[in-house]
Image 1 (cartoon, rainbow, N blue to C red):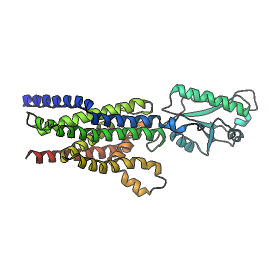
Image 2 (cartoon, helix red, strand yellow; image 1 turned 45 degrees about the vertical axis):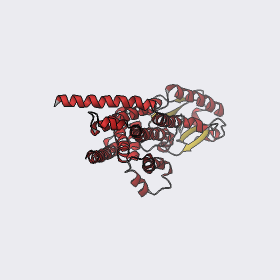
Image 3 (cartoon, rainbow, N blue to C red; image 1 turned 90 degrees about the horizontal axis):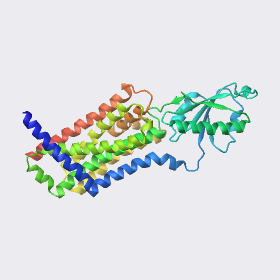
Image 4 (tube, one colour; image 1 turned 135 degrees about the horizontal axis):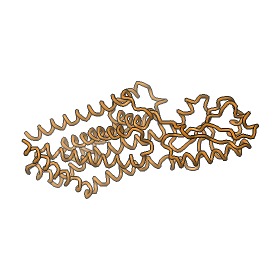
Length: 362
């Protein structure tokens, strides 16, 4: 029995190694990977491109009706955004996709400005902002505010870190979106293209009359698709490592999500023999999987019932898991049901793959 297992593993590895190399040589599969990674890069640099010449935001919570707020509104160096509570101020800060600073104006600031001492204002920064960027923001705003009010002011940011929430938009939304898109596009498109290329070249027929069984061939395709999914996710995570606070959760989400999407790719490649059929069904699958990811930015105008329905879509659930991994805390209640949903969908997909394979073996 052990000999049979070792032989089976050797066959699977041999086919997997061949598929990994073929994936790099094939123009169709390679273009799929490069296009997907290009999309991931776009989401990384989109906030900087989108900001253009717009003024940076200075987010303020005024505790005591300070007179300097009116002065700050006249600044031509930043756009003042004022809130009536600390909670709303921090919430707005988490929606930012570029480095920003939030200030809490103390109630006695006006009085301190009449003295000779340098008053200190508490500044808050997002957890994914680098120390150098945070220090640069602090220095710039200290100079600008001091010039506006005519008195030196010091901003204290050490330890004042604000984390994104599981439902935050801003950079957290863009990074989770990039991860899900990469996993979905590579998992489905790459695997399907790999299988169809072999069908067209008759390589898969040669494999099936070799010592390799159909199950071993499919397992090799799964491992190849999984590897490329993980590599794509590694690129996204490397570009956005600063936002991740729970690495174990984001890695778990990538693995479970890749199981699901690669399984879909294998299922499509196993069922259909004509590429046009796969393109049609692939389009019908991609739309419900990817379109709902963009709905959080329209949540204010959509019915809550519709949002609840979309939360049962595996990619939407996976998006929630990733955004939890960016936040300060990761309680099981916030990601457990979503991760379980994706895992169950992956099991269902592979059950369908097994059924298709059994039919084809008859």
